[in-house]
Amino acid sequence: MRGKIMFLGGLAAGFVLGARAGREKYEELVVRGRKVLDHPTVQEAAGVAQAQANRLYSEGKDKLGQSKLGEKLNTGNGGKPELTPADDAFAGTPATVGAKSGVSPTNSSVTTPKPKAPGTGANGSTL
Image (cartoon, rainbow, N blue to C red):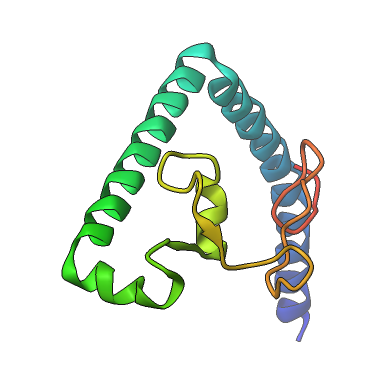
C-alpha cells in the first residue's frame, strides 16, 4: 500500500513539473511559429498560393459549367451558376463575379464564423 502511495505521489510530482516545463516549450514553439508565419517571404508565398488556388477554382468551375453535366446542373436557374456557402471563400473571384447568389444573407442557414481575437486558439483559448 505504501509503495502505491509513493508511486502516485511521484507520478503527481512528475506531472506537475513536466506540465510546467512542457508549457514553457509550448510557448517557445508558438513564438517561433508566429515569427515564421509573419515573415514577409512566407506571407508572399501564401499570397501566391491563394491566387493560384483561386485561379484553379475558377478554371475548374468554368470547365464544369461548359460540360454537359454543368449544363444539366444550371438548367433550373437560367444558365447562371448559383453560389453556395462553400463559394463564400472565393467571393469576388472571376468565377463568382456576376453569379446569382443562391443564399440570401437574411435567410442563410449557414452561420459565418466570428473573427478570432489575435493569439487565441480554435476553441477560444489563449496560445
